[in-house]
Image (cartoon, rainbow, N blue to C red; front, side, top):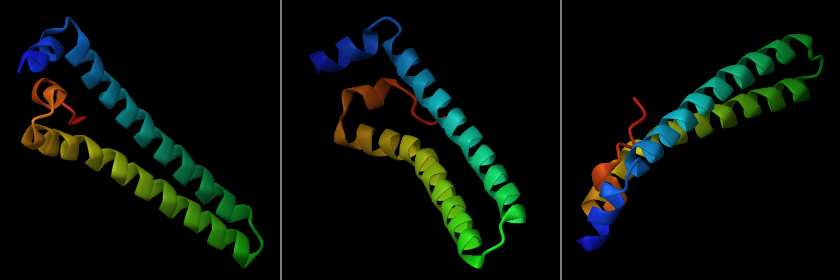
Length: 96
């Protein structure tokens, strides 16, 4: 209990962690858009079927990574507060 109050009452720490999660999520979404558009443009100029398969696999991997990034914040909020983690009680890990 004493540890919870120290973490939650530290000046600026909860806001800094919450801001980090929001910035990380925004950069991840922006990265997805850039990768998706670059791969789509590269598909136009590829000539072999193997290259197109590789680009489509890369797009799927980027989408999967972004979905994980968007799901981890809310999951940590729910499971962290359920498990009694001190930071999950005072920091908002949901990026929106």
